[in-house]
Every structure is written in structure tokens, then in C-alpha cells.
Amino acid sequence: MLPPRFVRDTMYGILDKAITSDLEPADELIKFNFRNLTYIEPVGITILSNLFQWLKKRNVRVQTVTPTEIKGGRNCPLTYLDDSMFFKKYIKKTLTPHAAVRPTTRPLEHVTYANSYQWLPSVFIPWLSGQLGVGVNSLDDIKVSIEEIFNNINDHSSENIGCIYAQHYPNINRLKISISDFGIGIPGSIQRKYVLSDSEALMKSIQEGFSTESTPGNRGAGLNNLLTSIVKFNQGTVNIHSNKGILECNYGNNDIQASSYTAPGFYPGTLIEVVLNTNNIYENEEEDFEWFL
Image (cartoon, rainbow, N blue to C red):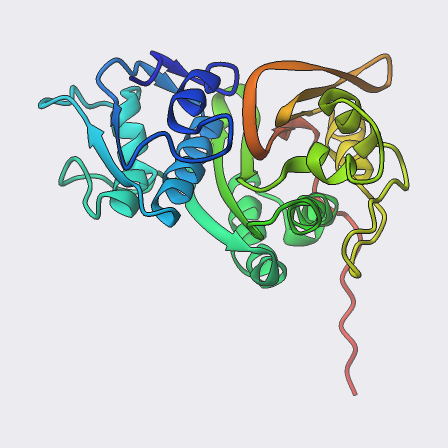
């Protein structure tokens, strides 16, 4: 049974029931009941997607239980999930005949590390540009920040694929981007070289210049570039859940305020939530020059 509010803090009950402490599927058949769902965040969609993908990869039969009647409307969580194309992806059909991707939504996608460098400039950044009404060149820092997330997926995940979903909330001047993977997690990778708890490992991962150097292409930037661009300059927020650690980064006192603590459950991989403050994204005023030969 999904909790009424499916957000990053309420996901652990579902994960604990579906995945054993040995990181194996809890059963050969798992049914997910959506009947009590009253609210779901973008992070909830990526969490469910990764979980369904992970179970199916291990030949688990996954079934969904939904109400016979859906009340509909933009604020209905099942309608929102349906419009995200979640059900289309996992049960091969939408719940309602009128389901469609919303104009403010970048629908659910699975992007491999290898394809991310093409997908970001050709798909995601143009969508973001259209949502925010600025040129693509004005989003270079954000593009580099998301590249850094995929670098970390490649560096810290055995799955090598990220699930990404984004939602613009123009009424509150926020845009939420959720990216997750089910791999060994950031702490699991760092603990190969350092004796640290999961929450301590997450704090270490954001130190400037830190890298586990576990892959030849690792640039050593860690997650510090992400926090500098999103939290310090944009005054947004970044939240990370990985294994038994949680890292929350907010803007305060003209700098990044980071805190980490032990999670109430286990996240088998890494979940990163980026919340952009759209009031602080400005058009690049540098003039473009054209050279003629």
C-alpha cells in the first residue's frame, strides 16, 4: 500500500517491503496498491520508476492496484501519474483515455550515462529553456550541474542508468528535477576507500575536489559544482538520499548550508532532488557574434 503522501521522506516503507535486507526482491510477485494515494512529488515518480525497473530486471511480476474510478482533475495524484506516462511505461497503457504529458512536465525517462551528453543539450536543456523563457546559453551552469549528476551515477552506480523527471511550478517560481538510480550508492562507493558512515560519506562527497577516482573519466569535481550552481548562485536546494544517508543543502547566510543524517530506511542507490529558484535565472546578455568569411 502506497502511503497517502508519496515523497522522499515517506518512501522507505515501500522500499523496505519490496526489497529485502540482502538487496533481493521480497517475492516473485509484488502488487502495488495506489488506492490511498492523495499526493505524489516528482521524486516519488522517479523512486517508483526505479523500483519497478529494478524488480522487472530481476524477473519479478509487478502489478498495480488502482481505484475503479479516478476522480480526475489536475490535482488528482493518479491523473498526475498517468500524465507523467508512468502507467504507460509499466503496464503498457494509460489509466484514462485522455492522459497526456502536461506542458509544464518533462516526462519520465531513463537515460544512460553514455547518452546523457547528447540528451541534455538536445532534449532537456531546450525544454528547460522554453519553460523559463531564457536562451539555452543562459543555462550552461545548470547543464554542467546535471552532467555532474550523471558523472556521479557513472562513478557510483553499478546500474549505469538514471531515471529523470522534471516539473515546473510557475505559480511558486520553482522547478523540481529528480534523478535517481538503483546502484551501490554514493556511500557504498566512497566506503571502498574510507571508513565512514553513510551520512559522513555524503558530506565527504560534496567537498571541493573530492573524487573516489573509481572510473578513468572521473573529473574529480564531486558534487561541489552542483551545489555551487544550484544552492549558492541560484539559491535553490539540493537533497540527496543514498543508502542509509540523507544530505540536505539549502541557501543561508550567503552560502551553502549542508547537513546530513541517518535515514529511517535504506535507499538502494542514489536519489537527487534539485529545486531551482526560477526567480534567480536570468537571460545571458552577452551579444552573439556571427563571423562571415
